[in-house]
Image 1 (cartoon, rainbow over the protein chains, first blue to last red):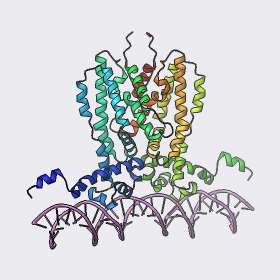
Image 2 (image 1 turned 90 degrees about the horizontal axis):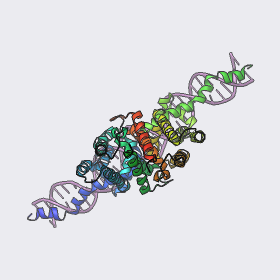
Image 3 (image 1 turned 45 degrees about the vertical axis):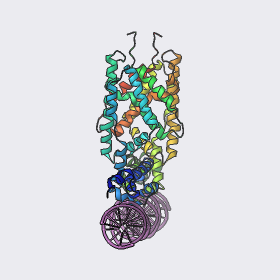
Length: 216
Length: 216
DNA sequence: GATATTAATGACTCATGGGTCATTAAAAAG
DNA sequence: CTTTTTAATGACCCATGAGTCATTAATATC
């Protein structure tokens, strides 16, 4: 009793540790299965097997297949765009360099992490789970679009970028990144892409497409 | 009996007409259901109801759910890219005008027709039906990429376009079109896009991104 | 008009997989 | 060491939906 608190924090008992880790393990297993087979195509028994437990155990932590699925998706939707927005406002370099940096970040997030697998879930299960699409749009898409839009406006003000239709639809500037993600999900097996070369072409297109022609 | 042939061609008997039309009706119903619910999420009974028949009837024309699914996808994969390739080789205008025309065509195919719905099927069911992905890549993607690549090279030769990484990865030039398709499948409910404005931004980006700077 | 053919039906089987629950065993409390 | 608690199990239930088939009725044939 004397060292209750110390024991609780310093070295959690195996039972407690299990209790805390299980949900995460099940969610990780669910992510893999749902991403590969879709919601309907995924058997809870496979999720359990992958997590090293038995089907019934899942129901100690999640009410239903739907609840698990939503937990899986939410676990990956933690948006860190607000923090990025802060970093941008204090960026020292040119708008051109900033935009290139943002595109680089996009490829880091597409390359590493299985974030692009989430795209498949979003596209495939959107009709059945409209709430997920709405959440992703609100937290990631609209914030991301606003961010790029701000950078483009900055570049226009500084005389680096042309004004034009792209300033109104700045998400178009990230389209090649989306294409790379979709490609990885579909045709990579038949025709692998070099992500660095793809990024280079992306940057080349966007920076030259926005660049203000000095001759004008 | 005398006008057997005439009756056969001019006005087919209701029974024959049914026999000929049923598969198409079932495929159309299947396309709608599969596109909305995915392969696993689709109930054959719903497909039958939509087609105005009963589940058992489907099995007169298709061996299994898989067979119906593949028939559905194949029916939309009729590639007409070879014909387009022919038309391009005799195009009279500039490479710039040709590329703009091709992008316009892309939006016509994305806008009208439910071709973009096929994208959802392809992305969602690709892992379960790798043959479909492979077929689509071979018949549409690689031919389409070759086509754009040819136009870009033409533009470079004529001094209209810059040479650069985009000449090696010409599919990047169609990325905004892909984004428009995905957007329609996901976020259009929450934030509809004006496809004409989107196309304008697309053309603006691509033509300026490729344009050779006269000052150089 | 009688007979043969076959498209279509709908009631059926059966495997699958989501969800439940009494039981077990391992840890915590005393 | 004994008792209580609870994470985990696995056998079970049951709704669902793919696939079957004997029967029906509309058409074609004679």
